[in-house]
Length: 90
Image 1 (cartoon, rainbow, N blue to C red):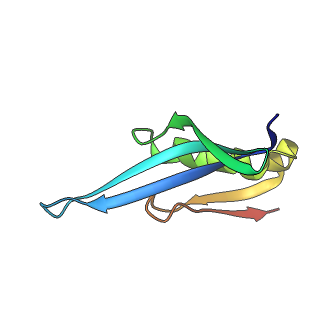
Image 2: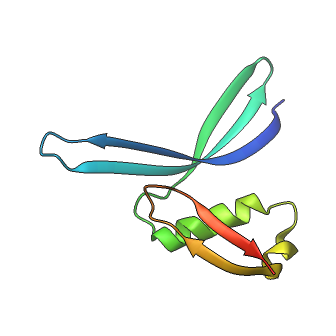
């Protein structure tokens, strides 16, 4: 029976022969199944808007206390290649 389930973002980027850099973003779930750590893709977020991806990341960071999101004073989104969200409290 699986236990210790956790969600995270997996990002992969690779260059093509023409110099363009491609990026994939997946929402994945990691869980233990006996002695093995298994992973499964929940959603492919590659074609989503960077603000939507950042909002999902923010919700995952505060999944234990979503009411704390209301106390954030300002949210700054960084470029999607950095994959970070900066938050400040009031």
